[in-house]
Length: 263
Length: 42
Picture 1 (tube, rainbow over the protein chains, first blue to last red):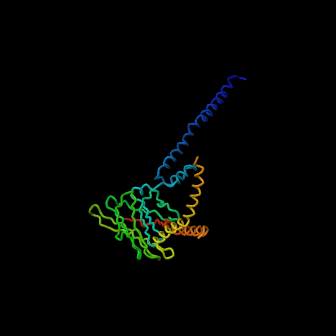
Picture 2: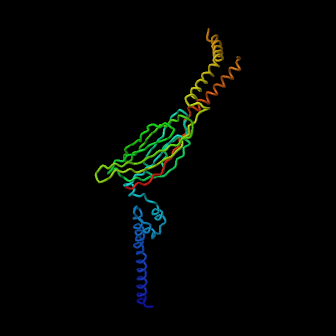
Picture 3: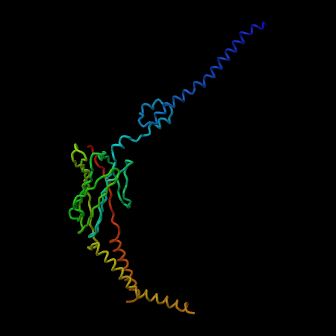
């Protein structure tokens, strides 16, 4: 066999090997394009303004989880202030005793209900409230009035307090029940907007009308003062009745200790 | 009045005192409501 006859065959084999090698070497150059594409898709997902439509082409499940996470509304935080109106009142009053009614307008940054009283047995429920940021243009006053027919309320006049941004406001009234019975009380609250600059008008915005009942009770016809006095008197009487026996026991103990203490 | 009667009366008055003082001094229950308010739009 002629040796030269092998040369084209060898050249062909070498060419094929080179072509295969170049093909296999070219693959790593192409592969990074795929992660780059994923990276570019994942980048905008971190943005809070990203829409859901931009997420759908992504094949990665983790990206869709990131995309479906609800983003906080950035706009509301700068224009609105969330506040809660909390009213606390006594369900029962002892005859002759006084107790307080509390009105609190507080900031709720999380947008959820914030309990403000930690006394056991209270029912707390409600919703957050959004109030536009009017502090720049207005002085905002919280005005409230408590009226209860048959009960003594202090102060009788409507109360007012200036609202400050991010600061809670509290108001207190004192209720006193002179006679036993079931009484109705109404707490009215409103916002009074006084403009700081010209061009705005003075406005009053109603916030709440809270109706509640207060029951005034006594103990066998005795008011709270006489019940406490009776308790004190009974304590003294019980101790005085036992006083001779207590003295006797004390003298016995003293007499028993005396010989032991003497040498 | 013998010792037993004094002891019984004393315990009776002390029991009455406990009941009266508990009723007269216990903290009163309060009710709390966090009320929804309207959204104020200027």
